[in-house]
Length: 84
Length: 381
Image 1 (cartoon, each protein chain N blue to C red):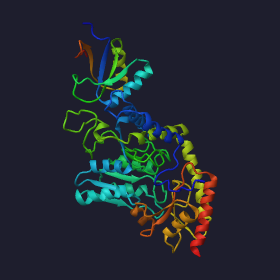
Image 2 (tube, rainbow over the protein chains, first blue to last red):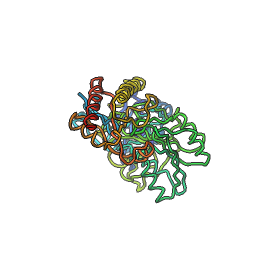
Image 3 (tube, rainbow over the protein chains, first blue to last red):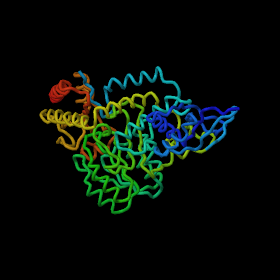
């Protein structure tokens, strides 16, 4: 089964997620804020869904914003797996 | 004609876009902060934090805790930080929102409280503070602008003295935030507390507490934060640690609009308007026979907050005449600041407080002064 073309990026806090929204908008990196899948963690919160090809750009942006990426996940056959 | 002169209690009117923002949020914005995927609630809170950060030169907006008023902000820091035996220094112009929690902790927790007496016109002497801090203190809490007489403390000097002493500097900016420039870096402020509904021009039910790096009080409230819900313990990360329960979402929408308005106008323009208000009202009050101006009688280092008495008369009588005969709103009494009144020499009788706002016009001020003159004459008959 082909993995989804999207990945989700989990940041340390909601505040950092919102900082990254602003940064991605400024840099023209498409994203969507979605609810965090429960299978990733039981915490309530949100994650940013981005295109797999933008992982590197988002990681660079996170570094500039001093935001901590707790994980990058892809979905295969409705299951989320950590890839970074 | 705007005859509301109690802006020290809460500002009115608000900018038009504040009303529209609250209405828009009530009608259209779904979701609760932190609980709905992609919800606009989180974005609203984030925007408010960022705007506050811009206004006060705060580097890390996650350390801005949103509250419901300045009293909550002050209690969050005072009650959360102090331990038995800690020494706290404060001034004699403090509001009950500072003096009451400090006295409660003195009685119940055994903190050591030292109060520096201000001058009879309401100013602390930085040299007195320097001498007091020859003995180490944990926290210095200072009211920036008096809600009784408008005196503005010299926080640039005070902040430097406190920083050099090693204590934390907590500024109660209830009256001054939005009215005069405050810079947490330049003024060496470790904790900044302010309401959203006075000179920040937002709705009631809003406020904030900035906690500088390394300032980590015990939370006052524990509960749902929209994060780490699987744990029985309060999150450690900010701002969630100090924001349990649902905030005044709609009020904060109004505050967001108000902060944008203030930043667009610019602190320099706001300060210029405040200075002009001071000059106009002060000049008028000084020309009315039969009243005494309490506190600073000059136009420097002050807010547009004025206290007056008619010697030998009950200030309530003057306030009532202004209200009933001229429809002018003032505030009479001790203004929740008995310490300040003791310092100024107006305890226990209190004063009539007149506090004009940013949107008063020249005709409004002339009406105030004319009415006051007539009221005093009536009282003297």
